[in-house]
Image (cartoon, rainbow, N blue to C red; front, side):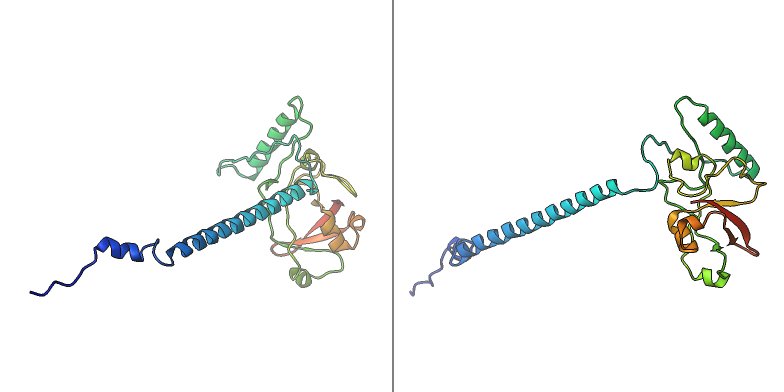
Length: 215
C-alpha cells in the first residue's frame, strides 16, 4: 500500500525553533547587551544617589543649628496623669536641682517639647506693637516652646541681645519671651530692636502681654 507520511522527530522540530535556531543566536547577545546596559544605568543612578546623600550629610553636619550637639544628654520625662500642674512643676524643679548638683554637669534645663523631638506649639497669635490681631492671624504662626531657666545655657545657645531666662521669671512674675533672630527681625525690623518690646499673645479671649527680654 502507500507509504505513511513522513514525520520528523519532535526534538528536531523544537531544535529548529529553539533559542539556537535561525535568528536565536543573534537575539541572545542582544538581550545580554541590554541587560548589561541596564545594570550600568542602575549602577550609575545608585552612585549618583549615594554621592548626593553624602553631600547632603556633609552639608548638614556643617550647618549651624543654633545650639550645641556636643556632650548633650536629652531624655523624655513621663509623669503620671494624676499629677496636677503644681505637682508637675515641683517635680521638675526638684529634678533640675539634683541634676545640677551632679559633678561634671555644667547646666540643666527643661523644655515642654524636646530638641530632637521636633514638636512645638503652633497655637495662638503674637501681635507686636503697631500690628492688628486680624492682620497677624494671616501671618505664619509663631512656634512656641516653653522652657525653664538653664535650657538655653545647657544647649549653648548664643544670646545675641538682651538676657536669658532667670529663676525670677516664675509663674507669679510677668510673662517674658526670648525670640530667635528671625522672628525678632520679622516682627521688629531688626533683631536688636526687639528687646524691651511688648507683644500680645492671643490664645483665647483677651491677649496676654509679654515682654521680649532676649534674642
